[in-house]
Image 1 (tube, one colour):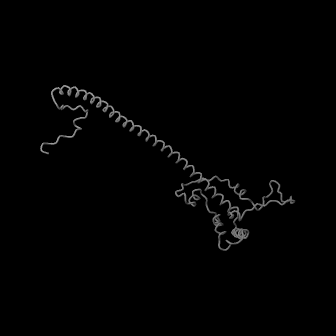
Image 2 (tube, helix red, strand yellow):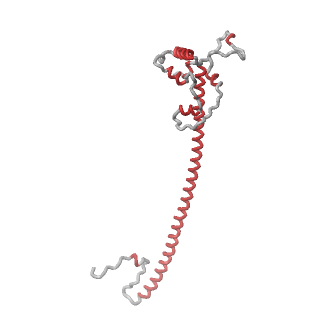
Image 3 (spheres, rainbow, N blue to C red):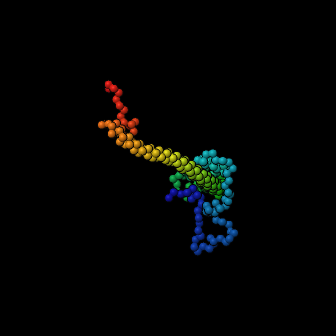
Length: 225
C-alpha cells in the first residue's frame, strides 16, 4: 500500500509496557509526534467562499475562493509533496525521506504542523465545495424533475385534448354512416316498390335494386367507343 503524504511526518507513538514514565498526566506537554487527527482538530476554521468559482475543475481557484493563502515561507503541502517526489530522495526509505524533509523545514524555520494545517485547510475547502456542488446538483435535479412533471402533464393534457377531437371526428363519421345506411335501406325499399310497379310493363326491368349507388357503378361508354 502506498504511503500518504502525512505518513512521512506524523507517527503515533504508544507508551511501552512497564514504562509508566511515558504516561502523561492531564495538562502535561504533548509528545513531539502528534497525530494528524490531533493537528486537524486544532484547525476549527469553517470554510467560507468569498468569491464564486468560475472553473470548478481548477482546485487553485477553489483555494483562492476560500482565501487559503501561501505563508511567507512558501512551504505548502504541495511543495512538500514535490520534495518527496524529488529525484534526490524519491527512491529512499520512508524514514530517510521524512528526515530529509524535516531537515529542510527546520533549516527554513518552518514547523511541520504549519504544513499539515495548510493541508487540512485545503482539504476542508475541497470538502466544503463538494457539498456546495452536491447541493446545487440536488437543487437542479429537483427543479428539472418538477419541470419534467409539468411537461408530462402538458403532454397528457394535449394528448387528451387531441384524443377527444379524434373521438369527436370518429363520432361524426359514425353518425353520418348510420344516417347514410339508414337512408340506403329506405332507398332500396323505394326502388323495390318502383321496380315492382315497372315489372308489369317491361320485360327487362331498368330499375336498380342492388342498393349500390349509381355513382359507384361504371360510367357508360360514349357512343362509338
